[in-house]
Length: 70
Image (cartoon, rainbow, N blue to C red; front, side):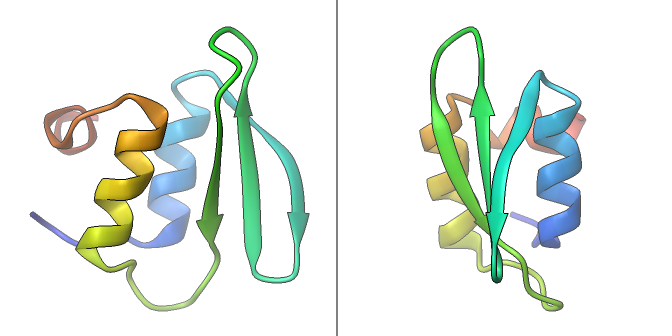
């Protein structure tokens, strides 16, 4: 699986109906109004580790294919 930057992950989630609930220090909390789910994305300059990306996708209900096919 390809590594993604935090900005790419946030852009993917925003384009799928997620909103930025709040941001504190180096973490951004996103919230989805319809399914009432919440996830946190760490804001760093480096790409996120693959395990972190998979955990975010699991929390949000998306798959790797959804992310790769944007």
